[in-house]
Each structure stands twice: as structure tokens, then as C-alpha cells.
Image (cartoon, rainbow, N blue to C red; front, side, top):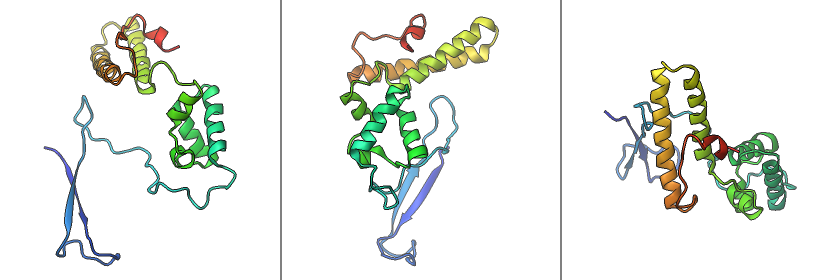
Length: 184
């Protein structure tokens, strides 16, 4: 059984509008389940509601400043998602894309700082390496063995997507033996 949330949208202006009144549209939002479980997690940070530069933001933080800071943080060894988190939490930049009119990955591509393997695929490979190392010491851990199968399934699915989108080369292939080399 899937869970649904129904949101009522009233075309009437103002906050006192009755959502059940005539002319109301309903929008059904279906919560997606996780890939290999039936759970439906909803936690996580939310993006800013408006795609405008906020009034409270300091004026010296313009597009050039944000681009320079992205390059500096990436050269320090941070992943693109960590760059975004650091800019949000330490420098008060809600969205790089709003200020610089470019995504973080676009800025990294322009400065030849893009990694060979995309970040989400790299994280999956790191997880598989960790599980494989655990299984070398604990050969009877069948739960972890199943977890490794699920993670490697996700790796194969994600790598197939990236080969189709030409982010990875057509002959790129995941192998557990070469996984540690891919993480460098």
C-alpha cells in the first residue's frame, strides 16, 4: 500500500480561502520508497524556497567571489556537495546557482577540477570497498554479503546510466579489484 499526501490548492488569493470551496484543484504527491527497502525517508535539508538573492546577503559576495571560493574549496580536496555545504553553513551562500548563474559542477568543469568518477558513484564504490574489507575479516556475515550485493547492484545501475549519458567512457567497467584505484 502506498502512502499519499493530498495538497489542496485554492485559486483564491489570500490566506482565508477555504480549500474545499468551489474551483479548488487537488495535487496528489506520491512518496517514493527507497530502492531496496520499503521505507520512505523524508529527512534531509530543504532547498531555499525562492530562487532569488536574499536581501540579508552581504553585497561583496558576488558571482566572482562565489566562483573563486568554489575553486578554492575544491582545490582543498572537498567534493562538490561539501563545497555547497561549506558555502551554505560557513559563508551564508544559500545557492551558488542563484548568485553565480552556474552550478558548482559547471564552475569546476571550467577550471578543470572535475573528478573522473561522479561523486555519487564514487561514494557507492567507497561503500562497497568498506563492506568488502569487512567481509575479508568476517566471512560468515551473510547480512553484509547481501548488503554488498545490493550496493554493487546500485553501482552497476548508476554506471550504466553515466555511460549512457556519456559522463563515463563507453568501456568503463566496475570491478571490485580496481575499486580502490578508482577512489584515488
